[in-house]
Amino acid sequence: MDRKLVARAEQIEIDATRDLWDAPSTEVAGALGLITGVVGGAWAFGAAAIPDIVMNRVIGLGVFGAARQDDLARLAEGYQVAGIDRYLVHLAPQAQPGELGAWLEAAGYAPFRRDWAKFARKAQWLDAAGPASLAAVEIGPERAADFARIVTQVYGLPDPAAQLIAALPGRSSWICYLATDSGRPIASAAMFQRGRDAWLGLAATEPSARGLGAQSLLLARRISDAARLGATDVFTETGEEVEGEPQPSYRNILKVGFKRIYRRANFVSPAG
Image (cartoon, rainbow, N blue to C red; front, side, top):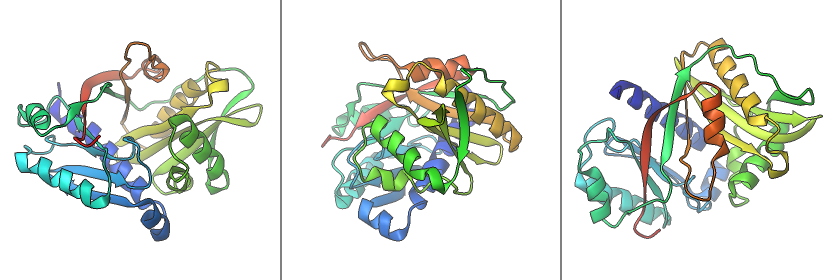
């Protein structure tokens, strides 16, 4: 496994998340209780008003340099001060030292029920086909409400999260999209691009519209746009399938040529 590729996959996700946290106004950021911090080379993100692990997580621990045991105590202290009880620590298989997973468990962190798969593929033009009624539309701030509504509802996020998500359409380094069916918005997706790397995220489809091909269309559009903007590699991630909970996003990602490059374990904070 290419350690440099793993580091790039983690870094572009960190960069996208940092920029998402910087997107809202100071007033909105304060109301949401947004926090960021660097601990042991990893980035910790939190949102006190959005008690969901998607919004409260640690990325890159032990990837950019060996972690230390006291890093775990520093993480716990930072989240506690911020009033965040439940957060997720991602653990890539290349994280150092090798006993980091054991340290997490000894400190009371519990393995989460679902690992995340990280994927990569080359940026290139893809010709996407789908029903004539479907379209993938790049949007700006004027469609931010539709974009945020779909993301928050499908992800099951509390209402305050919409203020954070709505800050992205029209923001530099991001392209946000809606898939429409005969003009009606049914799915969302976003791409963050910096230099040679692009990251895909915030993909969500309304339950009543699943199976129409909206996400396949949005994936192909984003991969093509990444190539157009000069990126060479595209990264994304999604949860692994667990019994009784199929992951259509996993299959959609594979269909457009992504390869799984590693499986990232997840640990839930002791209070979670």
